[in-house]
Image (cartoon, rainbow, N blue to C red; front, side, top):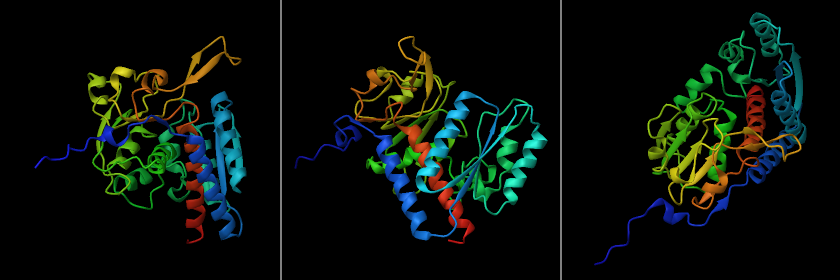
Length: 306
């Protein structure tokens, strides 16, 4: 008897499709808003802490505040000068920890080099750590504990894969980048014993020898290395799903702002080869903000014993 050919991942996903982060983020925000309305009572509150006037930080915090307003979450912004000491910033975080009307706290990075970011993240109460960067929450993630607050960007990546019904169980996922913000938690999420995970994961980084060899093995390729156009066409397996986490500014005199935003993936080269791909902008970045709102909802519900 003639047997059917063995399943291969690219056979399942033949047509290239853009993964629309704007669409999925909008659905997520609508869901968060609906749940807040349904539960009633005093609304959730998230506190944003920004040190200095870095333009990127100002932009990112502003976009998070807009999303909070859209879903009915109160946001409070605390801005401090770059001259603030680590001890002073720790004191400010302690004040927010003690405030029962604040359900989530996010300290925007980067911080001045005189301040240890991890010390600040660890000072945030784990139940208010909506950015998921406290060491306790990272440990809970390793243990697959549902109490963990998960960093927003990798959580958004998993949400995109689930929304587009990308099969992860048994798939080979390659994550390029080992940061505690994206790469490491993304790898941990993909290898969890869940129907939305169960992938075999390879974690690569800037020191990986022959990076292209590893990325060509990926059914799901997540690029989070922070270098513009690192992933080229010859580094991607035909039919792979490509998630581009990178946000990089490249000088471009044709643009009004004098630069353009590109990802870690050379989109024009890779998109004809893969089955699905996230654009930059319009992909993962929007999901990061949406997941922050979802985490704030979770913190608010926890404070109410829900």
